[in-house]
View 1 (cartoon, rainbow, N blue to C red):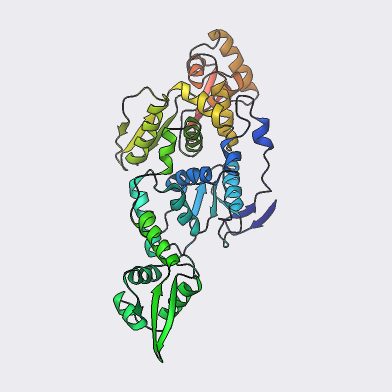
View 2: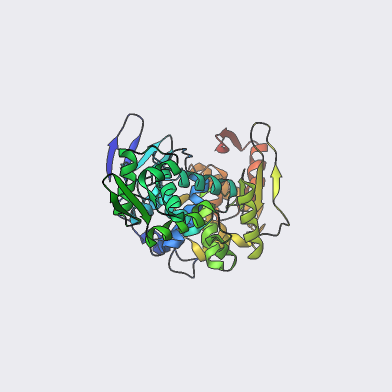
Length: 404
């Protein structure tokens, strides 16, 4: 592994992708390949996941000239996504590898990847982000040799109506005729999108080709006007695809795996409702609607709750996870006995004390070690604290237990 130390960051490039983790952890799966392994073979599946990654983890940039960045808090998950982007040649040339800073793993992808994303999925399941992305793609240059720039798009739209001389064309789109404008025309000519014919010593007529017409028609239809169809609609018809999407989301945003009570909580009502409707179709939720939570210091959030059945089924169809911690949680939750069945209380307390002696001292670690639901160890832990056998200290968002 190559390490390059920077002032407050570390850059590293993951080794060549190794499928051994996925194949060695498939004991609970009927399928032999994880969703991540299949993404290396199925580009549409990759973009289905990339769309979720864009919605949840991409740093918002206003200018596509800057490198769009993905930020992930799990090292193993970041390495998997980095290798996928590299596999499809969508890593930014400016990216030196995965950047590590303050527990966040960041890497840059090419701006062209965002065009490919929209062309593949057709429409993101989050209205505001879909509109904003289309606005950026329709108005910003992402490469000097591409037809997709604000000026070149305007040129093709004008020539789609009728052929124009260079000065007339410049006036039509509100651009000054000169060397920069000539450069735009030459790029489109080299791409085979327009034909430039000299009609006088200083006059050139510009005409659009059939290739240029096809490009601008597709651009207007798929970028500027959001279509009704989206690749995400396929998840309502295909259980496997739905499970693939849910596993990807669970690694990025969902909580409650250990409790077998998966939930998604986000500020985007559109996206949470999309997930809820998907769960209703495949009977992964028993709720009738999403819930809303108000916050004093930030935007309201919307919550979709899944049932216990969903945890085992999603993992069985699409696991293992790329995040090693999440995979452990899924495997534990998927192999649990029925909720509430965890042996005698006195035996559980004894086992808890033995584990704490060996520094397994958080409720999550204890639940994993005993292979019982995390909710089933709260009572014995609380009782041991009340009688004075254990002490409890809050660290971060959880508690650490120690023997007195």
